[in-house]
Length: 532
Ligand SMILES: Nc1nc2c(c(=O)[nH]1)N[C@H]1C(S)=C(S)[C@@H](COP(=O)(O)O)O[C@H]1N2
Ligand SMILES: [Mo]
Image (cartoon, rainbow, N blue to C red; front, side):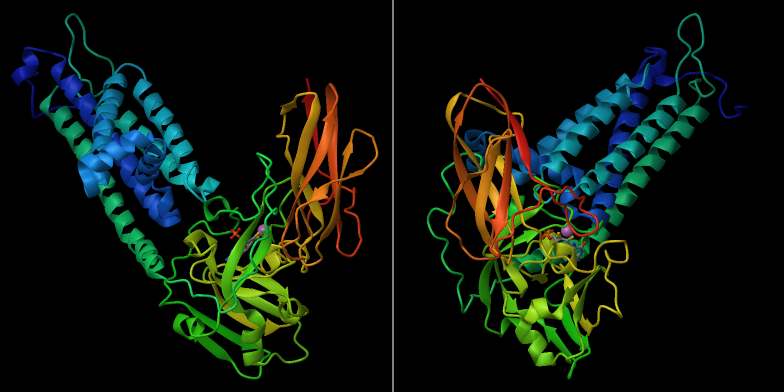
């Protein structure tokens, strides 16, 4: 390549220190790469989930893991500016790490390795966020990939100098003005890319923020009928047993939404139409004027494996779906309510399950709080006794009254059963998996569920011994799970504990193994423990 603009070689301070430009270029490369990581990461987060923002998630995780004394000290020192201080510290850390990455990259791709390592750490932090799904790692992974590319490209194009006795390798290794200008152009390009994507991310995140603000203002209606109080004893005092009520931030989350629908309560409408006497459309204000009820209902995912944790129990506040359907007037030949979410997910629920007197709700509150955006803000369905995929539509905006022989819902089209009653199941929580137990008296404990039929009994078997009755916590309702405990006189050696439940109709949980597809897993949960 011909260089016509400069033939005089290095000029300026470089003449004194042939390494100066190299370091400066490397540091600039590192900074540009870090900016690209941030920009692309924020843009991707805005498109996927605001909580997946690499920067914010890292900050939140730092806060979570800051010792209380230090946190209190920071709040005392900086007051409401504590977050600003945190972000400034993080920014400073980033600048330092970026410069280090750039300098390291000069000889070997150690800077890239550093970026990759940091990306993994941030990915772990992102996964600590409430309701995190695997998709939350996409922004940092995309950002890091773009950052590493930026770093590689810039470093290989950075102007270098002929060291005493020879010239550096590569094509653009001369320290001419042209190569320097080319490099600076590339670095500027990277910074523009970073700023552009950050701006685009901001713009795309605006809507999500509007929802967050709307959610913060949303006042959960006071139920006219409060849920029956949870009797003492529903939570047996066994460390490690699942809580009767699942806190919102650990409640399992399952949906098809890569980008969570951003729907404000003002924009929300629910249309009820199809095979009805009169079509109705409700706004949130219409809904909130109605008498609200409060019910405790255990939700379960059809994809839950035997022993799995895709199940949670919450106090839901909402409005009986039966009343809304009655108002629309369901025609007698209709047998399905096809609910649709703001993002096009559909579920087909039998009309009977919504009108047979069970507590099927259009819910707006979960454990006393508005639904989180991930759990369906501003409104979702909750139907006792049916797996979520046929009943629990989040961000629900449309109920079409139709027939099973006319309509097919999202998962049914993909091979799952049209009907999804929850199967009787039980799980061992204690002792923990791969745990060891001391010989002598021990407690085995867990949960069992058979929503809308109730759990009548739970039994435990050790190795191939007889089935022995466990002690059941008080029954809250047919629609909630039941905690159980069993006292075991553990003898040394390796033992397999197995559990089975009997539902309210007297049917014992089957031992036949089945996969979740097409209508829910079956089989008995077992756990092998070492007693020593
Ligand atoms: N809009 C929408 N609603 C949905 C789904 C979905 O993919 N999209 N998944 C369903 C499934 S399969 C389950 S198990 C429950 C899970 O509800 P949760 O995430 O609040 O626990 O939501 C249901 N509602
Ligand atoms: Mo599910």
